[in-house]
Image (tube, rainbow, N blue to C red; front, top):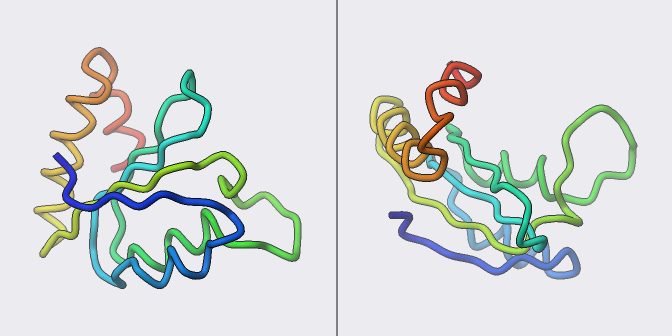
Length: 108
């Protein structure tokens, strides 16, 4: 369903993040732990969002950082907010068939 796939390792973060477009997209961050749920979301600027979630941060804080957990990034660039919202709905529905409505409410 997603069109692009990148393997992520913290030591190669700059290389991986440079390959990601600064464009609207829907994305999935998959954990290295096979039992963990994926992080599914949409954004207006994929590179900036992934830099926040996966970049090295010198200051600890309340910001979510998945750098040491993520093993794979999948994404699909979108052309509009409507396309992003619609594709996110379809992706959440297929990923979480029993709880996708609850997860959508958290996003909007």
